[in-house]
Image (tube, rainbow, N blue to C red):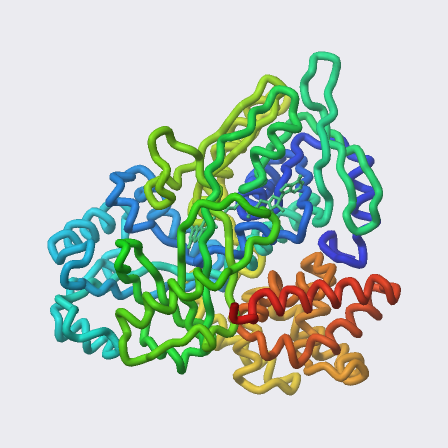
Length: 552
Ligand code: FAD
């Protein structure tokens, strides 16, 4: 059984209790996952604990772009743009099945915040700083070319446009694939385990973490030489648990996205446009839908599950109708959506959310605790490198010397497809594997594009367990996805499955409504739930569906 199988969870916890780790990482978002992978590759024995599901924090609630952040040039954040800009290609090459190149059109609007000279200079600097490949260099378009690319744009306000490349990802699956790779290399990663306090030695140095299993209620002590707080929006909460730590570092801002049917907003490529209040908004086509975001407002509510409110929805719908006047989008067209919190580091004199830097920062406390805060999904690998360098230095002895970071060359789980350029060929070459077991070409392609080099495991499930799928009245591919998620991705609840393993709650909510009962019945039987547990997971999923789908 795999070390990332939900069926094996008790055994994995037992193993973690008996181990003395070099490093405990608290937080299973992209930052923690990146650290776990880098550290494990360098030979640092690592445990990662996450109090919710992996990526249930900000790392499943972003705009899902692997991008250099063109708009940060306006704030003169050249270092940030250069670093994350260069990272785009690495993130793509490490896992082309979770990251795709994405054409982006930036319409230049009369009276807008960016003029054509500004766009030209900005994108020129962007190409330069981000080391953009020549064939992906920006193109500046005139008015006719811009309208030809996107006829839905409001014609009388368009001066021209800029056309450039970014990358789109599935943030939660990226986090999972990074973690799966770390686990396949001997890290231990556990979800639903909450760090509740630190354990100290006689010199007041942290020597471990007290944690609670939120599934069973059991408390554990995990021991380690080093501890990293990578809890995103929660870093202040964790830091004040440490006697030497300090809170009040973060300024949380909320960003929301809405999802509509692509037919309601049938844009031909991603668009990045100006709003009346000089913010920038993305509209991105994906899997038959278009998603739109994001807002950026100071947030002081419940961190665990921020939700969209009616004002957020109206703001985004209005912004769309302004630039695409013919589409007449209405709040009732919204099918789904999500809200996330940016864990920004407070800056003196800056209170406007959009003005605060997206840079990351490391805080070191006398107890040995290392805290990493801020940053972007795109820059996760470099953030992990910086923390792991520090951890390696601390762990170094004459007998233990740790190598430098190599994650720029490591393929994440599912990413062993021969490189980004060869991914389409990889899919083509392997489609017959799916067709041979009775799948349609489209279904086989879907599995290959989502799971990359792990697709063969799903094909094997389809081949060997079709009777089980029939018994539980599940389509073959859906059944294979659940079995794979349980056995290889530590999926414990129906919400884990429909939100972080498949994103169906966001991009295919009718599918969730159609299949939720069968999925719950199957998961209950497979994972041996009591009726009470089954009902509580069912309730949780219903609550999530209601949260994203109620227009109000
Ligand atoms: P999280 O993903 O929040 O992970 C922290 C984890 O710690 C959580 O899962 C939490 O449950 C866990 N935790 C907390 N306390 C404990 C505890 N006591 N014990 C155990 N676990 C605990 N970046 C980009 O590069 N591209 C984008 O397009 C982009 N768009 C964005 C749009 C929005 C609206 C937002 C909000 C952010 C966006 N970002 C984007 C930024 C990016 O999403 C974040 O920088 C990144 O996801 C943060 O990851 P993290 O791992 O630090 O935090």
